[in-house]
Length: 146
Image (cartoon, rainbow, N blue to C red):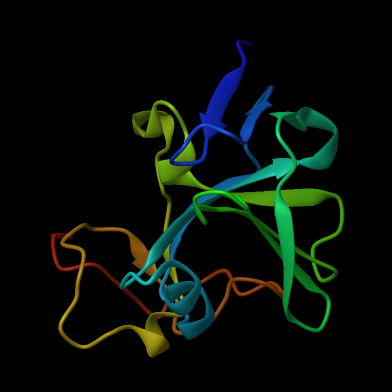
């Protein structure tokens, strides 16, 4: 499998991962929205052993207990999210990849916190909160599902 590369806006911080992602999804939670100043975030999860920062040193911010967010100290671009609740994996912003079209989100999480004026018109499963803890059935599906 080829390397998948990404970087911050100014290019000071660069990273890569090898192999498959663990998951790819859209998140609507308030924490992600505030971190990115956007109505939602699209994440990918990569096993730590398949990920590395290849240039530059990102700054860190503990946004809540057990959570570390990394960002570029020069341009401020958000780069990653790690939580003690999901050890052994790093979550990357899909749009920080050099080719974000390699990402295929499979669902929406925290739709209960979604901004009322924003929606994605897809047919993906939607979860009011998270899929963690074994929730397998979505609360509903997107508007394009027939």
